[in-house]
Image 1 (cartoon, rainbow, N blue to C red):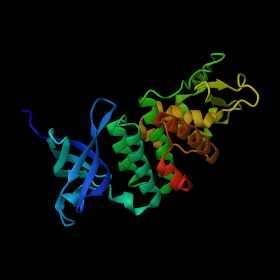
Image 2: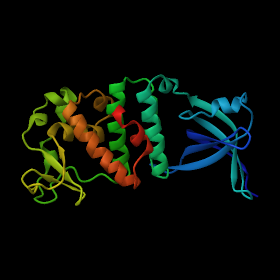
Image 3: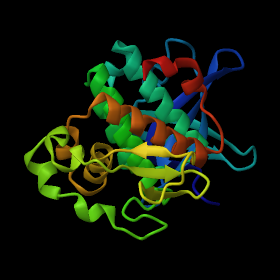
Image 4: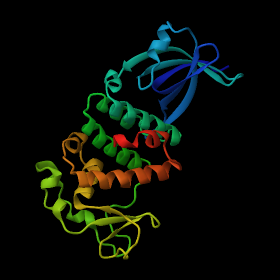
Length: 271
């Protein structure tokens, strides 16, 4: 008979109460290279239980689980927390971003990179409200890119022009985005939803529905996808570019999830 007790790294996504004060935890566990798996596990014990005080949403660490294949159930027997992320509860924007990340992991059925979601939660726990908002954009773009859901941002799908050849990497390294010559270029790139592709301004039909992406927005996405996180975190983003990227990225993530998000419906004003 296989060993019913096992352990793994885990991130607590949510808790629900059942029975007489018991709880059920939804855990995210690392699985393959860029994907995780979801596991439900019960927590037994009263309000003063040490285990209950450890298994809290957004805590991560090593969990020990007892699995009963006959009852198809799991029970948490121990949890050693490595990252408490206490700062998340100090600010409404922080806790909202964490709740959105947890809901996203569930809607994607665990198809999310373990390191990316944990780094995001750890980062926003010590970030300001404005830093949380831009961190959320970077998080979304990384999730979309690693999931293989990102459209081709380098070429116009109609004429084939390569837009990325005009993006100088040195601008990201030596200047702020808003100072780069490319950010102030006249031409925009457009994401056309019905084609799930990008087109240049010359190929966009008049009155065709599309998401406009300025040079500044494209440069930011380029930096997030190709440069080390330390560099992309330090880049400034104008209000216009932030608004463009927010609309574009949330459209893509809703498409990937196949539905809307409760966290967006309830607290969209925080963005």
